[in-house]
Amino acid sequence: MLTVEPLYPNSTFPRRNWAVLCDEIPIGEMTLIGWGSGFIALREQHYSATAMPEVNPFGPESVPREYKMLSSASLLHSFMEEQMDVYSIRSDGDDGLLKLKAGRPAYFLGGSFPSYRLYRGSDPSSIGGIRQKKAFQDGVVLNLPDEIVETLQIFLLWLVVDKAQWAGHRDKS
Image (cartoon, rainbow, N blue to C red; front, top):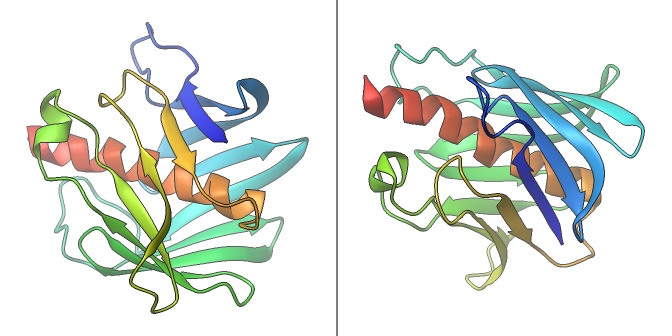
C-alpha cells in the first residue's frame, strides 16, 4: 500500500515536500513546486507532473485541466478534468475515472480530507480509493489493486495532494 506523508510537518510550508512510502518503507519523494506542478522521485526514477492550463489560485476554478506525468519528455499518464473533482484517466489502455466522494469544503477547514474513489472504464463499482483523515496533518493513503502500475498510483496521490493544496488556498481567500 502506498502512502505519502508531509516530509517536514513542522515547517512553514509542510505541504510542499511529501515522503512516498510503500508499506511504511520510504521509496521516494513528491515536491510540489507550485499549483499544478511538481516533481516525483520514485525508486531512483524521476518524473515531472503538470497541469494545463496552469493553475492560478485566484483565477476561475471551472477551467477544465489536463494533468500529465512525464519521464524525461515521454508522457506516462494523463488525467482530464471532466467536471469539478471528476477526472478521466488515460494510461496505456487502462482507462478509468477518479471521483471525489466526500463533501466540500469542510475538509479544508479541519474536517476530514476528501475521499476519492477509482473506477475502471464504465464499471459502476469502485476498484479502490485515496483518503486522508485530516487535511495536511496525516498521510494520504492509497488503496488500489496491485495490477495498477506504481507510477499511476503515485500520480493519483500527487493529483490529490496537489489539488488539495491549491483548492484549499482558494477556500480560504
